[in-house]
Image 1 (tube, rainbow, N blue to C red):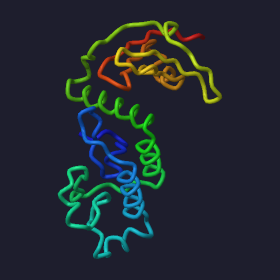
Image 2: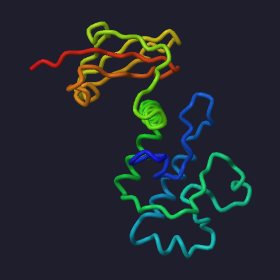
Image 3: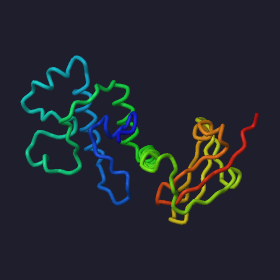
Image 4: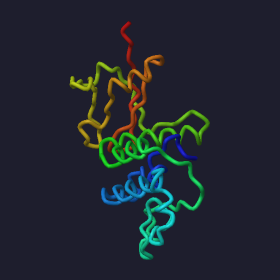
Length: 191
């Protein structure tokens, strides 16, 4: 199942969100970004398709040795065209380690929910109040964090935007950036 707006799908890259998965290098992500721009650009798409050196995949270089590389996803099936904004957002998110970690957690959670019919079991789920977390106030908004037993001092990180998305529920479930543990954070919305 492809997540709506799946950044990996947009760049024709495999989702390697598990800690045991293969790691995509910045160069591989950048190459996939440039190929996706060419593939989906309305003025360039026809020229790229006619290029004999172009393999037909947004992420697979045309050399025969790279065809056996499991990091690249085949794009033989027809795909919807993506906008330049979607491609750029995908690149910016996947090329930034912190944004990518947060995106991967979100994507894993969405996929787990879909597989289990909406309910997800969270390993090591601990329930805390928002006021139990440390807070950093910044120009872009506040963020709250708590260290995890895996050693990540900011393993559990929640932003104002995260809280606003879940305001009607008064709780949010956040996964650790460094391991498989989860926090359920309870909070009250000031009105």
